[in-house]
Image 1 (cartoon, rainbow, N blue to C red):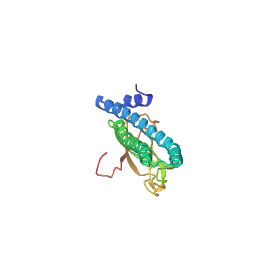
Image 2: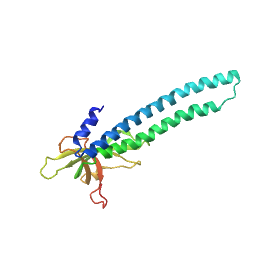
Image 3: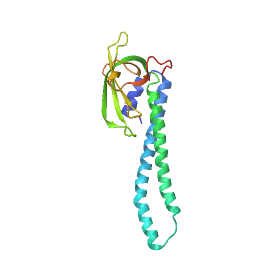
Image 4: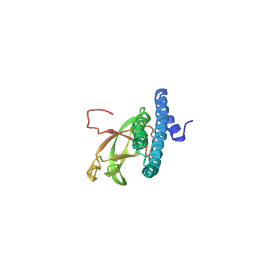
Amino acid sequence: MIDRQTAEWLSHARTPQTRARIRQWSRRDDLSVVILLVGFVAFVVAIPVGIGLGIWFWIDGIDRFEVFYWLYGSSLGVLLVGVALNAVTTYRLTEARFADGRCTIGVIEDVIRLPSNDVDANPTYALAVRAAPPEQAALSRTIHWGSGDSSGPDDSWIGRAIRFRHNTFDPDAQQDALFGGWPDDTERS
């Protein structure tokens, strides 16, 4: 079964190999989300269960503390495996989605600070980019930018050239963009 979002990604893929990679990584991403949710639920449930077992063991004088290592360790282990799998599959799915994408150079028109922060509490940004590919309508795209540290893009970035990958020439497909580097970089995306 393919969800609507995956079907849309598949419709933009130009080769059978890319469509197969998108299907494969989409399924793996769905599985990683399930494992992540199971680990989260197991860890949340382990807390009151551990408290209850601690009270019961204390009242009855039971000296079996390895039960807590297994209880918290296994639930935390499943949660961490889910986090790791989700990080890998999300990255690989994004890579597969833009494998057939066209590389275009545009100009940053605006730097927007988003209200949400990244996991390290650093600010995140959206770069409003406009590009004019030859014989096509001008493209308007938004590239999400996590700063990685407390500094980030500022107004001095406006007017800077940026390379990005996109799957369509739809001028208003804002989210159809993946950062591909800076045009002055020697390494290509």
